[in-house]
Image (cartoon, rainbow, N blue to C red; front, side, top):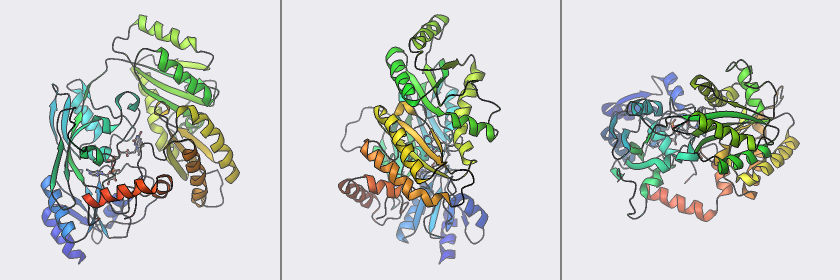
Length: 468
Ligand SMILES: Cc1cc2nc3c(=O)[nH]c(=O)nc-3n(C[C@H](O)[C@H](O)[C@H](O)COP(=O)(O)OP(=O)(O)OC[C@H]3O[C@@H](n4cnc5c(N)ncnc54)[C@H](O)[C@@H]3O)c2cc1C
């Protein structure tokens, strides 16, 4: 039976399988955080939408489960198998053409397998950008970032991927090709099916092509990093500059002191930017096209007005320093990975309740296990924090044994404070129980009915988000 499947798929496109190519199969099956050990039956590499359509038709007719996969950088195990040698991974890396950069309509038509960095390298030639900025864009692909509705550091000004998606080509589970939207921003014609695919984590169809909004590149940025005694001051500072600075804040990132410690310990940097260590830092990016001395003086005056809130500010003096600041921010996820076992939460909480969340969360978590390292950083301007708990040094037991108890604390607090248990990473496999606990029965039932409409035989990314 297996050999028959491999034979049929090989006729459509390049196929590697669990019998002859085990090491490669393991590479594509593993999730980024290394929590999943199941292996795929095989991995296929289609080169165009017709090949995707044929693979899906074959899988549909033969009841074989498939998993769409982009750069496999998701942090919730949403592109990995859930059953040993039963599922086919459809890897999209070979469908990777940039078709048309349309300056007049400010959009680009692009294949699902194009990496975000490659897209931006191409757009830069015309002075444009696709405004998704996060540490994984060297690997993350267009189809992956749409399927996860990725966020990153620019959401504050440009919105998430959903806000920048104009059109889609999707292959449905039975192999039919569906085209949605176009180049136009305004299109109020019935239900918005295109947006349904955004954030659906490969459970409704396979995206093969998209039309995305693009923007003229900003001429200049004013970037600085400030240090603070406590979180409340960071939040008050954010409130002050949001109101007083008359320029768009495109990024406002919270960074705790431990971020510097981890980056120094794991050789991502030599020393902190600051002589005097503080509990928190904010890395801030402000978009200003005509950044001249007069504007810089004005900005400095505005920052001085709230100098009671921060301890020190370092303003990037040149592009080199600007890059150093953002490289530090980008290294945080990699640095924490080297520190030990991690239980990660990707939460959002209204800003007026964030301080309360931090204080209550730490108290309750300390009661469960002492010595946990709180690496809690992220997109504060979007109310989104990567609330990462790293195992204590010299822990004798397995840190993951505490996962259920820690989840209970965090999820209860999120519910109490009207936040979200997954701000930008999605649900996948790792957040499935949290999702079921925090959504209403009615909402889950409606989502399951949508899934059944698009994928009646449940072949697409089974068991992700919820089980049918
Ligand atoms: C260091 C690091 C930093 C990160 N920072 C951020 C951040 O700041 N903001 C953020 O939002 N995320 C962040 N992420 C998470 C991750 O990069 C995003 O979730 C990204 O959007 C996933 O893209 P991908 O191509 O790797 O998709 P994959 O991981 O391959 O897949 C993700 C999901 O999309 C589905 N999928 C993939 N391609 C398709 C397709 N063509 N059609 C249908 N379904 C498809 C998969 O089945 C899966 O469910 C980070 C990850 C890392 C490792």
